[in-house]
Length: 194
Image 1 (cartoon, rainbow, N blue to C red):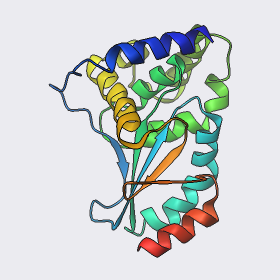
Image 2: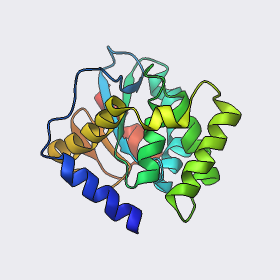
Image 3: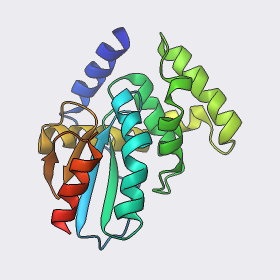
């Protein structure tokens, strides 16, 4: 609970501050830039429902729409605690705009996110990086100010523009979509827009 309070305080202290935009951090995006449907998903890497989205919904979405050039998806950061904040920094650390690390962190969420303290989460993330992504250094990734600003800016903009208050939240062509974990409903909605 204390880590959530500290995160909220950090978030609130930055909402009225101009974030550094000197260095461009790439958003994590998949799909054709020309896709008729633009889907945004706001998520937190410690959110179990977000992990469910990545495990159960995303593979079908990718196969049925993204790989066919019909939908472009952008993964936006909405960390709910400091562990998710650090994991988001790791997902963006290569700054290549590719979702490989993001998907990996969601698919392995049970190995690092379900712990009692931030220190435990950090230690598990350090081990995961060492075992799977040797090119990424936890300290370098988590101390990058430009990445930090990018993540906080995603969160601030989500609240301001779409009134985001839970994760995952899907935005389809600038409109909120209810029940993001119901693929059949999502599929029907997307088909109507294509």
